Length: 391
Length: 159
Ligand SMILES: Cc1ncc(COP(=O)(O)O)c(C=O)c1O
Image (cartoon, rainbow over all chains, first blue to last red; front, top):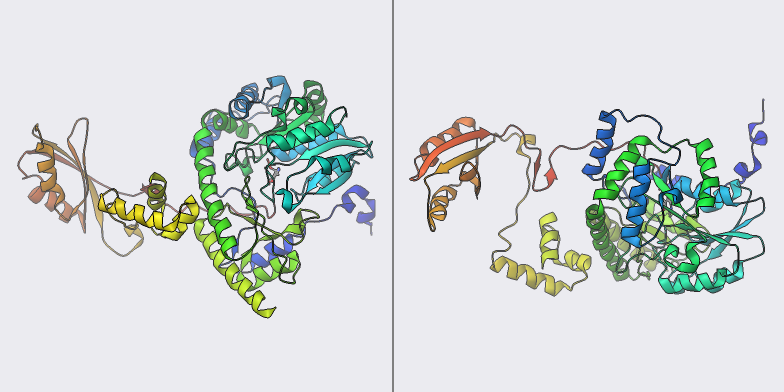
């Protein structure tokens, strides 16, 4: 018998499998269970966008595109970034990827030499650390704090920097906390990075989903623009998760090198999706607004509901997640979420799934129907009463 | 006010408390606004979208184009009133284009609807002609699609 495990890359073996699986295995066996666990829009892609994809198939556009993606799409991306966020790129500074996910991966792989450090604020989306490990880099986690509304502070960045620091990940608006970074916060970080060679990887996949203020990108801060790799995509803004399309923008010399990874590993992003994406960028501003308003209503509903139940929850101003504190019941986040699922049939995710600093919190996704949110709140109320009685 | 109306149009079962939470207004304000809208006939009722095709109920719906003699002043309203008072009439619209009224009529059978057109609608003074189109299938009403779309299988578990 071959010992396959032993044959394999140590980097791969060192990666932790997702601890979340068990929730969904339990969920699968339950009737009338509700999931507020999956971080995905609950809308179907707007029809005019789907239709553009279908039309491209009718016309027989089924071949590879250029490695960097359709020139018309890249043009539409640069127009969009200018129009929506006042960010200037030309089409030599963009290429189209298989989701924001691939864009993040190529940024990390293109920049790191073995042993290079990447500063990653946590709690955050799960992919950055493992991708850094796979690129033989070293993830350096920085815990953001509830009292700072889970923003990354200049001091935290300063404390994490070493001579090996290559990249700083800025995952805002944030999954799972819903935190955003405003201009002042970014300017303070720009000050810390001034004079260093540290690059910023800005994951702006939720840029369109902010409530009460427009998203500010590091690219809007002159001192950060030249050191920023911007990652965005179509999944969240246009409810296009299954189309697997995103893009990366940055300094042309970096993009030119980075494109080699994409060229050898991917060839080109899905052609049908690229045609649909042109339509999304050209005609989708209204859809974004409609969906954003709908998330915002549910955000307010859930926030009020959680606070009425006596949970402390910072008001998230981006993405579609809420990150309430659940540490007062003598249970770990994992125990809390497991019991809530088993006893009340509602799936939410323990904060610890998103890295250290998540203990004592849970992520609730409000991209779900008002009815589901209401039912979940009702069941949470019963569950909390039960826990409080016991104590 | 418009935000509240849009929410009620989306789902008239939303409670004032829910609407208040979703809009960030207080509950009393929502109650007062809804009451005022009802009084001012901005809100004209609450109803339910039923797909009768999924029940054992026999029901047919027809869309009828009606032409009338040219009218002045409130002539259209007067004829309209004579049409819409019938319970069989579900909706009535004054149209631009090649005919004047669009009348949606429901009944238990083709025969019943045909008889309504022949005996009630066509004889109304001022009506010149009617053209009846029976509805074969209702796909969408009030922004709600009636076909149930399949759920995508095997979705990712964790993002
Ligand atoms: C913060 C963040 N970045 C990136 C992604 C990946 O998105 P995409 O579908 O574009 O690969 C997600 C998906 O949940 C996310 O939450």
